[in-house]
Length: 416
Image (cartoon, rainbow, N blue to C red; front, side, top):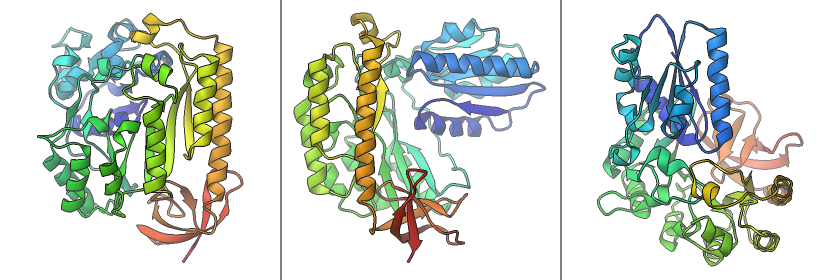
């Protein structure tokens, strides 16, 4: 059996869950599980091509499509001759049984999918990380209630659901026992975490009090979720000073048409709060270039705000309509050359900013967690990738940043 993963880090975590839940699955056929992504239409094309390649090179294969794409594009996969079985996110808890029944021809349905909005359970379990890694991802939440106009994910993963804080505490303790040094709290929308009155800040405070894991890192947050209380948590050195902000735009009009729940004012407040509280933090941004309602004036205003505030790097996504979303139905896309041009301008700004911030890291000291597979490389608490002379040392070590790598976006360090 082989599992191929497409898309986000949460999908990679879910693939580890599938591997555990499918343990013991046997068949005369070669089983391939494709854990699909649905963020863009292009993702679906890539997955279908992968299924075709598998069938062409391995006629005895049994190809299963699951994940977000299986949930929202069920018929597309079902109608493909290269796909044997489609299982939506809504039915992954029964993954092994569904596959076994299909292999034994007890189940004649090629596609198994129920209403994702009626799914109350979160697909979860404790998963042992790859033994070659010193870091582990931990899903704390799944689903989303925001329904941003450009996004299909709520239809793929359903309503927001959170895992109990006690389960997360126990999971981290198990990771500690396996010598994991960093846990990354992940989900579709972790800022919406809720468990018996506990929010995200409550959870972080609880985990800091009840576990000994040396490093805790968060995945994407929205500007309004970067609260004074959350920033106070970062006064604990175990919280990695790294923020990934799901910004999408810095213009109020565009944010409103995206159905984001904040404006330019909250964007600026988030930048200023981070600089004031944790000036050394690495701040990454996600931005959509060329949203249909973004005028040239809107783009210039958004660009000006970004240029005038402090952050580190930016992931730029040229807008393309995603079928099934409100924006694809409601708005006409901009000229693709204009979208590409805006994306290029933002990427240039990101390159300049990243280069500027990278130079500032010279002659500083950083706590760096070495990769187990290659312990001459590691990741600092503030998310800089670092190269060091080869060593037998394992774990986290303080290093001195001596130079910049000329070929990659890495920093070079000396042992101290």
